[in-house]
Image 1 (cartoon, rainbow, N blue to C red):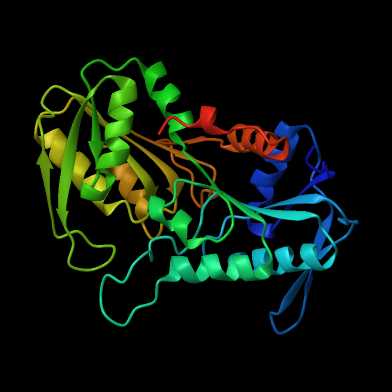
Image 2 (cartoon, rainbow, N blue to C red):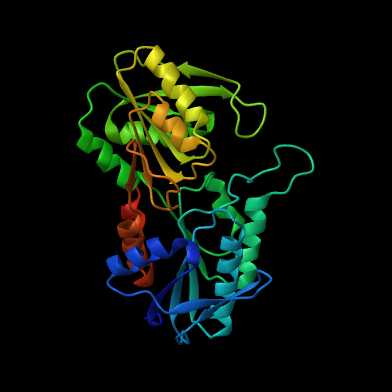
Length: 312
């Protein structure tokens, strides 16, 4: 029989709002921790209760600033040095995941570096959601539980009862995800082909497939500047679509993204709370991932299969 150590939940500062919900869904309270702040900006996380012999789940998304990632690394190190039995990093949004390959000369592979840093800090397991590329799981030398927000989005889309539903991939890389959604929703699929000459800027976009008289739902792993999604939405409406909605796991929403969404032809954008919204909008609906993470944490802790939670 595997060793059954006590379980404790902690959080970094950036994800306290989500960690509290996950712990409550699990039926526990967050453990006590604090951060000592030095006058020059240096900081030192500290556990304010014993974690000796415990399975410690540390919740922290690593969106900018980079201090969020470094705080997670320090907390993992602190837990290991405090004799935790195991340390599981729950990273709903894994930052730097877009840097998953050398797509031009003389650049780093940031996702691999982050994986190495987490492993070196002493993490026993990683739990994350909708990585930018599935192969990033292979960058880690520890088990990775890769969850999919489709488990939340697919039931939500079904409840809308949209007729003539079409699922759209925002780019060629998103075709696998869109195909999985269309399969579960028994709908057609279209693909957006985009020409991008530099990061965060789309020069040209083309729709492959028919959207006339269709209710379109664009699916993606994240919304950053929202440029691609809104260009696609405008083109689809011009091509005769009845409506265009979007679902995306991680609401990065940098720059003027929210204002652009407000003024666009898109009728609704559905996201999760892996990243806190910087700015609210009537067009943006947030679904929580807390229940899903709590369920998977319970199964991992009790050595049960988590495959039943996967839709995509």
